[in-house]
Amino acid sequence: MIYFRSDYSQGAHPEILDALVKSNDVHTDGYGLDPLSDEAREIIKEHIGRPDADIHMMIGGTSTNVTTIAAALRPYEAVVAPLTGHIYVHECGAVERSGHKVIALPTEDGKLTPAHIDDAWLLFEDDHTVVPRMLYISNTTEIGTVYSKAELVALREACDKHNMYLYMDGARLGAALTAPGNDLTMKDIASLVDAFYIGGTKNGAMIGEVAILLNEEIADHYRWMIKQNCAMLAKGRLVGVQFTKLLEGGDNSLFYEIGRHMNLMARKLKEGIEAAGYGFSGQSVTNQIFPILPKSLIEKLKENFFFYEWAPYDEDNAVIRLVTGFGTTEAEVNAFIAALR
Ligand SMILES: Cc1ncc(COP(=O)(O)O)c(C=O)c1O
Image 1 (cartoon, rainbow, N blue to C red):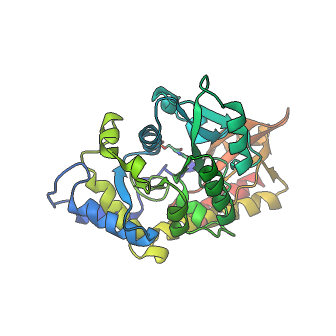
Image 2 (cartoon, protein in one colour):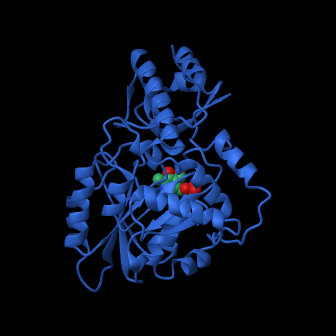
Image 3 (cartoon, rainbow, N blue to C red):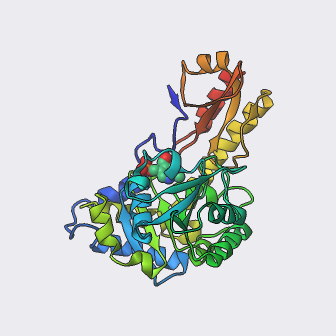
């Protein structure tokens, strides 16, 4: 069975595993208050150009989203997200459980624009409604598209106009920042958003994400919020070691090498599928692609390949999702294309 199911279906990139093994015998304090996590913090601060950033070792995406959103918002405040957004569709109502409404708005391509913010404020405007106070975006989006610098600048301006926080979910930031045509850098992001996280789990790490808070209001008592949201990892050092390995070397680091590899493998898959005469749903430029295939063919492919059956398309066809990971090989890509043909 060949896996195109997700970018977290293998263990960890060998260099990360090696770094974990090398740090194995060292004794440290727990909960991310240790020299190994501090080393990662320094590397990240340097790379994002923000020595003032407040940086936390986190266990996963959902808990980082819930903790950050709950840390930012007062009880009557809400977060605006795309209808396809992970916090709206795939987090089992975890944000709502923290007491904050998710205002989900339809988009053309998974991306929010300043017009969406205006729409949210038209819907919610007085003391009988919640107040849209935060904008949630993810880069890549849930459907593989990426934000340009101009789009992020426009969102920042729109958020400022409405006194809103801008939060970026970076579960797949490595794939986003290495996508063809991308013009955003980690430094740009850190200068434009109030908070974001860098995803490790989907970018070669065994486990973990790093939350980066750039606004003192969100950073206030954030560790208390992490603990109360059951998101504090006793062995926070494991995330620290992995992020040091991922980001040491900055623009030339393993983090970007893995992103580029995943995108390249997805591009090759896409070209092979296109050449075989099939089309796609959406305009993904990253490591998740969404081919539209005949249902009978999907059943045959399932015998040897494991992937997500994403959405119905029409009577005869359906959309599947193929995702490449740090360990995806060209031989696996070629095997899929050969089977398709
Ligand atoms: C954009 C995005 N955010 C958050 C998550 C949630 O991460 P986790 O499964 O670690 O909670 C995912 C996972 O699929 C994701 O794609």
